[in-house]
Image 1: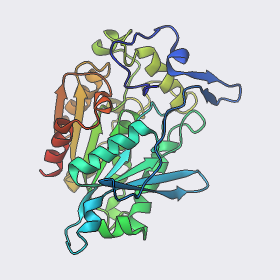
Image 2: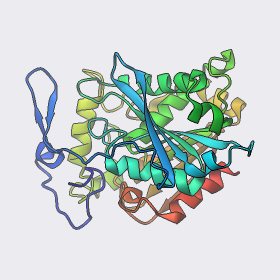
Image 3: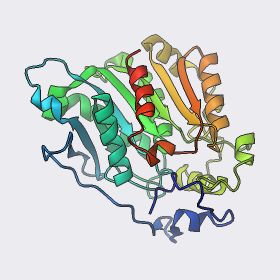
Length: 329
């Protein structure tokens, strides 16, 4: 079965039953039963593959972990002192679905590692509603601390800590944004040395708000991501009692400029990628405008397609070329 955020545009969804659309059942204890079981891919270090993968524990208590993607050529060029860019990646799934081992996320990261010649650290964070936000943010920040201190050879020997980017898709794009804000106010205390973050890559970031945008109103019966699905995912992910204008959901409500001043001081760049067929395109455009008003350096690319379109074609060379160009700026 396909990813809930990357269904075929020809597959109609029932707008009045987001529980059925998302394949979940509510339980009395506040948890959910996930009816849809997404295919998974195990890690492999078989040298027949161009990309090698390895799973490593992050926080055993929270059952979180990291999947590392390493181009095979890095092992074959051990005399080459040039290390590879490091991309810390957070997967999508509306905060409630999928993992770093889900085939759709594995294939996406594997192709990204191959196309960009980069080390990818894909974080398996805790899901809502069993662990509501900010649990995913906390796990994702913890992954950065783990990366800077680990003795894992694939990270220590092949990743260029001076060229690190934080990236996420959909809900993962939301996580990447908030991790960036959290980290920007602490790097001055050298908490993340020797990790040097260069910027954020927000791929179809998942945001919302109490007032519907025009693109959301047009997308009530969107075949990929109907707005009712978004409403339910936010209901399950936000802290108990929080509304849709909570800053986790709506980034435009933040009045504190401290983090944005730090992002400017650190000279981070932010890359926002979206599609005009995405119900959240107006949110993305608004985010870009807000960041530019704050003086943050932003690169944006909006094209044709729907939410999560790159998942449907993970080998999309043009998509990865745009990211490569941003990293090489």
